Image (cartoon, rainbow, N blue to C red; front, side):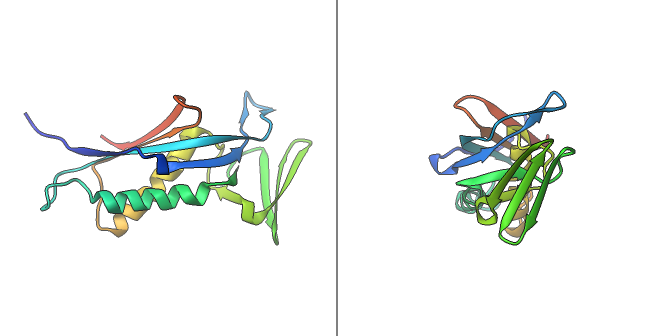
Length: 161
């Protein structure tokens, strides 16, 4: 029987508070609202010469840096087919049909996603974590990111096996 190893990062520090809205059912757009998101990560790979999958500290610090960039911000999708997000100077404008929101640019994170769902936030966070881990010379055999938006409602994205 083969051994498979992974580490799980699931700390209170991986919480971020952010506002967003999503569209669904074609033309329904939620009101702007917020969540206290909590992120966890499962990172798999073979044991290295130190007998661990990945340095906990490096992975923890990378995930913490990612979640801190999202904290106390408005999350806006830049690839949405019907929400137009534009930045002019210090302002960001989001438009959906007749609705319009204007925010200070410093309060926003413009995300390369088509909707700010928990699933796509998990994908975005995972891509950022994979890039950070690669900078440390580590490529996991699999990665799973879960974004909990409401104490037990999680969007999950998994890479690899």
